[in-house]
Length: 56
Image 1 (cartoon, rainbow, N blue to C red):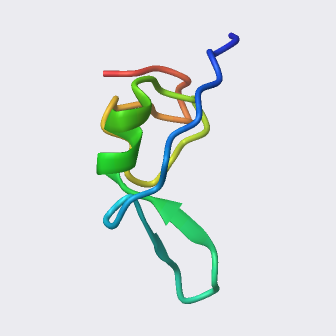
Image 2 (image 1 turned 180 degrees about the horizontal axis):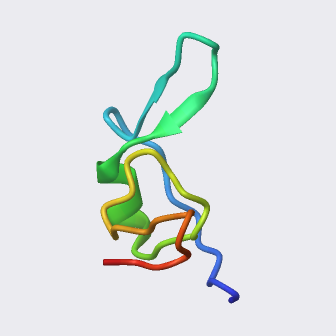
């Protein structure tokens, strides 16, 4: 599935750094983006389950 690419300016609360130093996007960011990327994101507000490949 192809998704439209749009530039989203990062704001406070859009992500945090994990103890390992990775950027982890929050639910706030995902909602601003407007679609599910189906990557199994930790804070996916769309309910995607990577194990089943389905959204709620």
